[in-house]
Image (cartoon, rainbow, N blue to C red; front, side):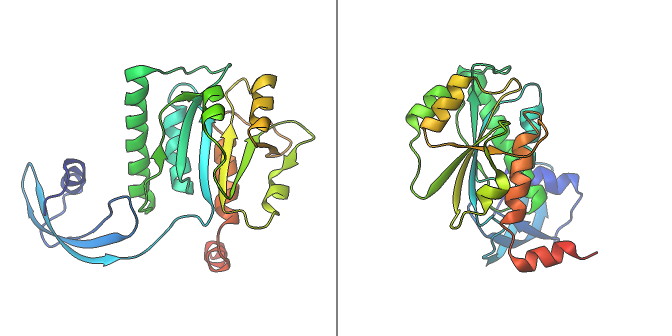
Length: 239
């Protein structure tokens, strides 16, 4: 079996040799042990060995719907939330968006972010690659995306009267979450009401106002930690 071009490039950059062991995954769960048979300038031939059924996913399935931050911050957001276990990412545009994408430019960006997510999986040991959905305006997404069965919806908010993330996590049977996060200038009042009307519950991350690219990472960090089983919590506490 021949490795894909990108995977073969990793082997060549690392200067691996024939008979070296590899761990491979296809993004759909589990992983394979393999051995390098032959390396040329253009290709790497390997032998697939045993398939290992192993999962490193969160027990909570999280879709992060985020109004895209400007510059390269969306790249960082995709990378870090992938490492933290997000299942899917929905890039959005809102009234106060700085970054606006459409057509071929939007499609190229989504393809790029999908490759960023794949690289983050390779680095972190995840064997399921998050889905990157096409860019869409927030209002249209709210209208066209009904709440999935058994899903809970949060919209991250700085309003002092909203429910805290700790209170939200105290609710039993939280298994599927859609988390909506806003742009640099925040959501407009009309957008907040539209989100609430679509079933999103205003949720606070604390007293401090976080940047548009910090809030989703803070939420995913809390969700990742809260979904750990006791054995994982013990192992992370060891020196």
